[in-house]
Length: 322
Image (cartoon, rainbow, N blue to C red):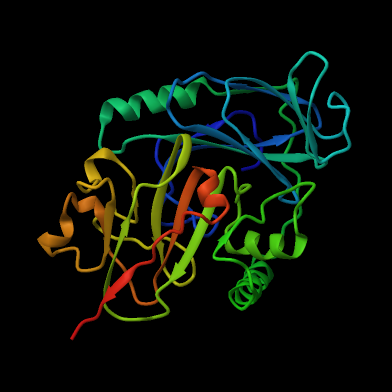
């Protein structure tokens, strides 16, 4: 994108080809905007009832602010003007408005809207929620950034991913805790592993890799402790961290009343999705896999039991081919 003048509201979730960053997902619909804060901006966050709707805010240096869930108006600035705090920071103005000072010219906004892909009525309602989100400013500004060397970028990212794989980074991590608490070393490693991550109270991530082990897998997830309208999901990736193309269009599974077992748990299968036994309760709960695949389990608005480690997420178990 160059001239940025309006919110880019996508009616579809992440594409399987041309994914701009690694470890994207199909969990929600996305509205994405880069804001030039040469002039301040005001975000209008709509009231959408109980539907999960979150607004993520990132600076150019990936300072990750707590996500926004409540309807209202939010002021965004480059410097401390209007916020009365030293950026990067967030505070409340004298009028009671929330103000975020990014400390960088550009701010990245990502609106996540939950929708039931199998329900046309719900999709339409989700699109209405997206359309109600607005950003206003006197001038939209310009997109003026260096022409970064993509070859060098890929090489650096690969090296960081290798370092992260050999580090002591916890499986359930939340190093997107900035801006005031960010651990810059782990922050750099995890940005390379999953750009766009948010603080642990907003999303917590569990990475798992098959390590090249052959065979089919399954995982049964008990009821997950989440706050308010939070939810969980599982997404599979190739060894480079990208969703792979598959005719079935299934790269991820999420919680849902149609996919629960009698005890409230949810079973997700990996591989051999032509087997009718692995298509229950629905085909959407069997995810095709490739050699070297891995998965990320995401918890949106996790409860304290997840954050403090009291609730331990399960791991896939394998069924090796004879």
